[in-house]
Image 1: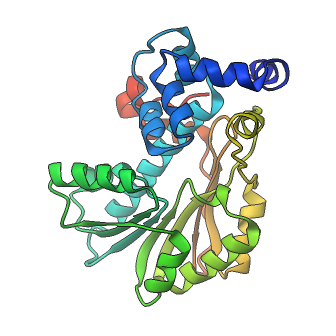
Image 2: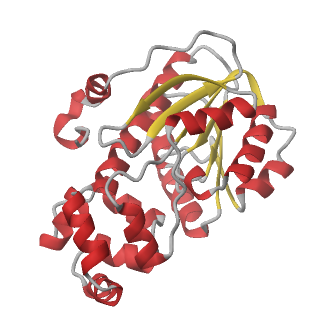
Length: 287
């Protein structure tokens, strides 16, 4: 993977790569060229369908960020399901999902647990909001999930009086500098109910993906290790209770809370793999 990354970023001209993506028969490569990192390309990665050709196979099956995006989603879905099951007896639970995209993983968790939670999902991409609303309507979840199209930080000012039992910051903090993220975390801490949890992650550039994103699309993801995210969470008044890195090491997954309970023992990579053991062909973590 590192060899391919070196060839891609150091030896092939940017103009050649862009032209290849624009004319590619790979749906993922074309979509990523049209809207880099958008929810449509992420859905293609999650779907992980049969590749159209060799380049599509490489983009879907062997690009580390594609593999880790699927790993991250499986881990996130598991956390949502576990949390809903653990809080089954509680009433009027509220979830806030920032940078949610269509929030389909939350919908799937609700369907899997028959949970009666109320969700506020925020994303600045209007097409992602439209997609989420459409699927929620089809699944009969439109009364449980409210979508809002707008800037996350601006929405926090409007919703400062609301209180949530679970807050999801997935796929957003790698775009926020420390000072902006710390300010957001402090606001969110004040919006958390007693014993609420905040679920987020770091990002580590293990396979040269950052160089490709910068070279092709001028996307600059902010790298943070688990320890660096923990420092920011602590500065915001939150305590990490669970931390584990996805199999290829790209995403340290972190759960924090206001509570003073002792930190849970980190779960192993084998345990993460067991999460999806019931449907191994479709859901195996990729390493």
